[in-house]
Image (cartoon, rainbow, N blue to C red; front, side):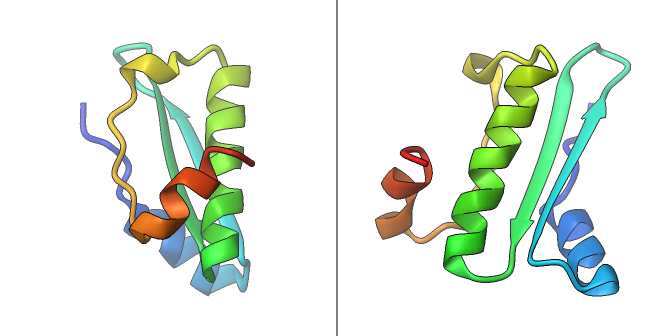
Length: 82
């Protein structure tokens, strides 16, 4: 199954003037698919944390996650501490 592109979440943010967007979907393969977007670096951290929280809440398994992050290296550790 194809992942949801971050661009889809970014498009929603721009269209509806939102700072943080999380898109959660259930695929035909019964996997949870999540795409997150944040406008500013702190928003990106919030979006990543919410994406992980929503995925877990929906019964997803974070050990099976394919991550595509656009966070700068210095923010990656911080994003998982939120």
